[in-house]
Each structure stands twice: as structure tokens, then as C-alpha cells.
Image 1: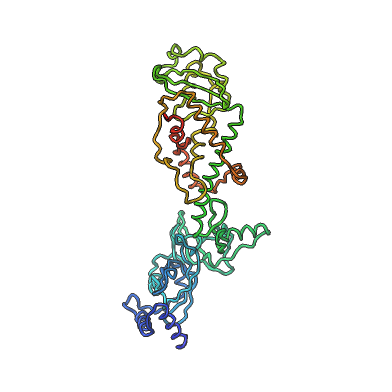
Image 2: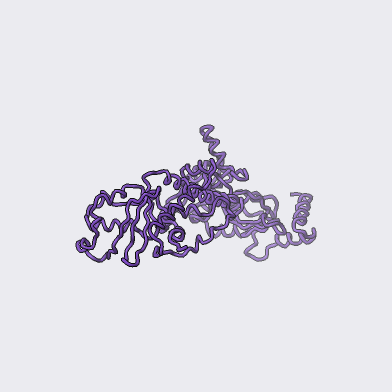
Length: 467
């Protein structure tokens, strides 16, 4: 580098930092002088190959925040006696698209920690190096968007460039090491067909801002690929749309029940005088199918001793004709479960006429989905959704009143207007995101602990209130 180009670079650094030319020159001179015996290695003596694969923190004094970060040196060349030009592949930062982006760094202008001299001296001592002299990393230290093995590159539809050497090594659990290559220097694997080429282009293009990258972007919950800036926003939008789609499906479910002649509504109420539940079953058109009193059964009494407490109608086959219908049960009271206990007391074989509520006909869950906040992310929560108190069906309402309230709620759900697009989305099968083994185990655990009935108190507050 001649004196003219050196002055031009010093003047450019002074303009960026806002300092005078003299002050910048003094700082560069002081930085080039060794402060101690540990930094006595001149930069021109440092072999460029010693810097490759090393993780460094870089910062440009006096510049904006985007001119700094952490990354891995993927190439280095000596430009003068006191300077080396390095290309640094930046590590990912939350909310930024710096994942794997190359940044040009001049060692005499940028602050680099550790410095080239410190890297060279650590390499001479063998610190953090494998037996081949390359930097050694543990699994998970460096993301695949910066350094990756050959199989990892192939999964990203990349391969090492001809003649591209490995920059570092990664320790394996078995005790050996894997070669790590710079992802930014790799070349794309040629597409086998036009369809494969279009698929690769979609994976490397953000569906929101159309930014491109050599490394495929992460896939969102909607199946499209997004950059780091727009991924969370897209997933939140997809989650809110899924909530809206559930509400649309609840509307279609209510319409289907209103038109199905096999639908029966099961309601119950607490009889204070007899201390038992009155079971009432009606069709949606208000035809009474069953109106009986369920005696209070103690679970700890043996089944043989319960027979003398059972009413005579339990053994009547005509009383069980409704058990094969499509049952919609009022929440919390568990009238259908109490009815099954009666049948179990009469006969051990109740499989032929035991009533069961299908999973898709869970009234509490469908109503919870119906009143959830809809599509827009800024929609306010439904009042009382999270703080609804449990309501017990010990009210002055009769079982007929409870069923009439159920019928009113179903009509309210079914009469909700939907557009053609909303109906089309409701009939579409929900998309299941692609999950790895750990994410699938976490999802299964959440499903096991989640309440399949939604929030029963929401529906109970509508059915059992004393107005």
C-alpha cells in the first residue's frame, strides 16, 4: 500500500468517526505499537491461514450499530505491514437478517477481539485447536448458516466449492471431529428439474420482503419461508388466522347440528328435594325423548348393592333409544357419565347401549372456539374469557330451561354470517407444521395437559345463570 492510499483510508476512517485526521492517525499509530510482550507479534507476520475459522467480535468505532457484531473469519489477506483484510460471516442476531452475511473488516480500522496477534499466539500454544491445527468447536457453538459439515450443507442444497478447504473442526460425541466449511463460500447444488429449481428459489426468498439468501430461510407455520425479521410476525399472523378458522368451523358445526335429525340435547338440573339430577333429553325441534330422575349413587358402594336403589325404568329398553343418537351435552354436570353408571349397575355389558359424546361434538370446546378473538392480531380479548369463574348447575332452572338455553346458543352460533372465503377456509383441513422429534414430544405433552373441553365455565355461565 502506497502513502497516498494510506492517507485516503485514514481520512475515510476520520470521516466515519467524526474525529480529526491527526487524532485518527495517532490512534492508528498507537494501536500498531505493541503494548506488551504478549502483543509483540506484528500483523504482517501473522499467517492469514491462522485466522480462518476463528470466532471474533468486530466493531467499527463511531459507526452505527449495524457495523458491529460477532462472526467467524472465512477469508483473510495481508494488505499492509499493519493490516489484514478479513471477511467475517456474521452470527444470527434476533430480529436481524445478519445470519451468515459477509462483512469486510480491515484490522487496522475495525476493533477486532481477539486481535490477529492474539489469535496467532493462541494458535502457537495450541489453545482451542484440533490436532490438524484448525479451530475446534463444540456441537451447538456455531450455527449451520455460518459453518456446516458436508451433510448439513447438502440438506441446505449446498456443497463445498471445488478446492474449498475446511475452516474448522467440530467435536463429535464419539470422540472424533467433523470438518466444518464456510456456508457463505459454498455453491448451490444444481437443480435436477425446473420444479426443483423453483422450490429452491422459494426456500431462499422471503415471502414477505422478497429478500434472497444463499441459505434457505426458516419455514413458517403457514409453509412459506421468511427471513429472521418477518418470521415471528408471519407466525403470529398464522396463529390468529387459525383461531379465526376454528371459530368458522364452530359455526358450520352448529349449522350441521340444527339440520341433523339425529341430534339430541342432554340437559340436567339439581333437584334439591330429592337430592338428585333430573336428566332430560330433547331433539333440536323440542321433542322430549327422556325425562327421568337420576338417583345419587355413591361410588364406594358395591355394584350388587346398588340394584335395589335403581328405578324401574333403567331396565326398560325403550329408555335407551336415544343413546345411539348424536349427543350434545350440557357442560360440568356430567349427566351422560351418570347415566352410564346406572347402566353399569344393571349389567356389566353396557357396550350395546352406553351413550357417548363424540369428540367433535364437545359443546364446551366448540363454544370456546366460537367466542375466541378473531383474525386481526390487535383484536382485544373477549371480556371474561380468562377470568370466568366455575359455575355449578345447582340453580333454580329446570332441565328444560337448560336445554332451551343450549338451543339458543346453538342458534346464535349457526346464524352467524360467513363469507364464501370464510366457509372455504373452515372446510379446509388445518395444516400441521413440520416438527422434529423434540418439538413433537413437547407438543404431545402440551396436548396431554391441555383441557380438551376448552373453558367449560364460559358455556356454563350462559346455561345455568338465574336471570
